[in-house]
Image (cartoon, rainbow, N blue to C red; front, side, top):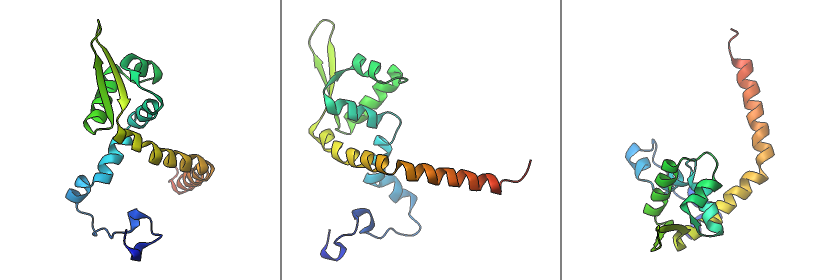
Length: 143
């Protein structure tokens, strides 16, 4: 960050083109990471693996509602991004353990900051949603 942007959040330090080109949006590394961790299961799995390594079935039991197929797909995506490591142990039957990579561990701090922000502002967000719902209901045409 340059001296002229001191104190400016990094997401605001650069001007976006107007309109934002679709190709630029699709290629944005920030959006790409948000799509990965913002899906239904990835953030939860990163948090679970942040505590300690888990075997596949442990993860499956720990996350209510996730199918084996979705757990596999999500873990493969996190592995492809370099956030999760898959270790196969030569036992009979083979045992597979998942853990965060050093890169994955660096994600825990910003996830914690986001979670802390969400908890800190939960009441304000709930109030804003209620006001929005009330306003939308008043604007809706009578049936």
